[in-house]
Image 1 (tube, rainbow, N blue to C red):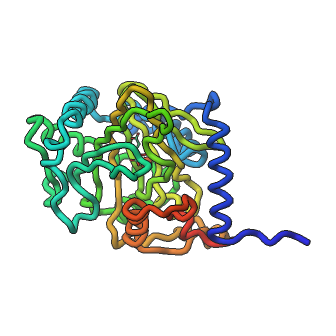
Image 2: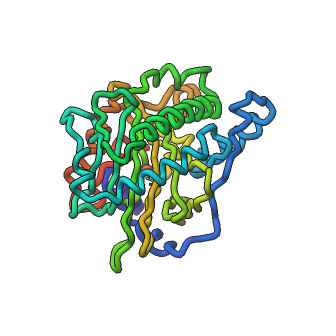
Image 3: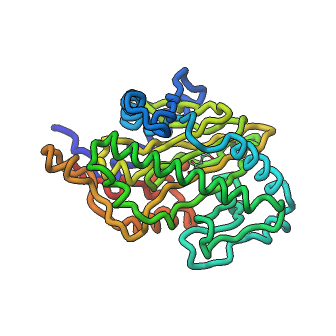
Length: 343
Ligand SMILES: O=C(O)CCC(=O)C(=O)O
Ligand SMILES: [Fe+2]
């Protein structure tokens, strides 16, 4: 007799277990690397170059959900300076850093400086801001250039986020400006500077495997390395190349596109004897948006929706609970599979 197919959570546990085993097996890592894409055709409206780049991007989004970009419009000097300034800031004493602890309890995320609690599996500390001018933002007095550099980085990364969103829109074949109109409020975007601590003898986890929940994320990493993306049972290193920005897709696009595009699973592995610094910009979405697979990827082509609809805010809250009240069993952590339909 055929074995009944595992349902819902049981099925998810199976998937995760398989992934964890293969993660352990593949820790040594294969030869694969993620694609690098030149964005200059989009910035200078070169139609032919755009078409070619879009083919590569569409493939990368359907297979990996991850790629790196060059000629992205973000100043290379600014990238260097912001990494340098974050080293200066994170090297300050805990007392000094604590002066910019989050102070606004109703902010959707803790803006300012946060260190992961000792019991957290993630071994990092970070500094988060919402768009310049947001009332949630808290900045340190020192280093004196910190605030301006952070603001400038926000502005430039936000521009790139908008460009990438329009590229995603085009690669998915959506009506012109569909995503721009759906996601017309930039107040929920945020920028995070991170410092990962060196690996210890028995723990090299910097950031546990996860998918980003938003539209698209942009990562600037220093030369230490450790960011890895999961593909076909393998952990592929995202090898740092100075001046490049890593792009990874979030769950919102995976759901809207009914899984045509993937939000890749990724993690950060820490390195013995070295801190690792990075910046991540989250091109996000208003909490009151309703997310469900769009008809173009479901009923228009005779495909059943792979997800039930949900309010983005509810998903964000569940993801937040993963952090504030981490479940003891990894399989109880909420992922986008929480909304997956049994097909
Ligand atoms: O620090 C990195 O390289 C990536 C961080 C990340 O994946 C995240 O914050 O969601
Ligand atoms: Fe991430």
